Structures are given as structure tokens and as C-alpha cells.
Length: 88
Image (cartoon, rainbow, N blue to C red):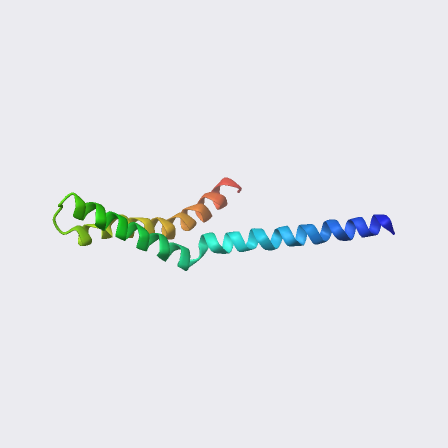
């Protein structure tokens, strides 16, 4: 039964690893993460533009923020297209 116990332990470790990987992937795709990064980007860009005395700093801070959000929406679509055409 020692071999069976070892197999059971290995299966348990694989399941635990899979749960961690699934959680990491869910975080990478989560809207909470996207919105948090967007907020930090907006605030950082806004502060920088204020410090250099640019005009309309908070309006201009929307450019990198929207660009980031757009990239998170378009990349999964591009990835799906790439996978379909790469592995035909």
C-alpha cells in the first residue's frame, strides 16, 4: 500500500497546485485587478502632469488609463485568434 499512498499524495499535490494556478489566472483576468491598475495609472499620470504644470492634467491622465484598459480587452481577443490560426 506504500505505492498507493505515494500516488494519493502526488495526486493531492497536483490538485493543490492546480487550485493555486487557477486562482492566479483568475486574478490576472479579474476586473478588480484591471480597475486597481487603472486607478494607480490615472493618479500617477495626473500627479506627474500637475508637477510639470501641464494643462488639463486630469483629463490627459485618462489617455494612459484608457489605453491600459483597452489593451486588457483587446489582447484576449487577439490571443484567441492567434491560437486558432497557430494550431490549425
